[in-house]
Length: 97
Image (cartoon, rainbow, N blue to C red; front, side, top):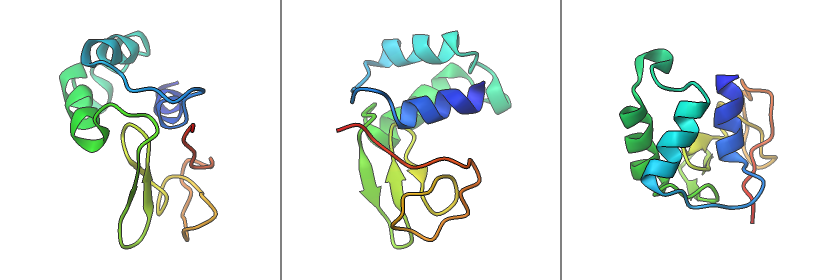
């Protein structure tokens, strides 16, 4: 379930820039508080600095593209058709336009 939350926030149905408290509520409702030892504050802080809460953000690195609110790497976690990928999550990288 929690992995699904990450994927949904990466590829949300309609592009969205969350407000801080709105994202915290969304993550709390999905059971993310305490997941892997991280607090809601940790997840919200990561989203703030990685993407500015923007679900459609795409960034470039030397080896991959980074997608969505948590800047998920196409090198390891998803397949985008542009990057050699381990695709550990067995999903496509995507952002809504």
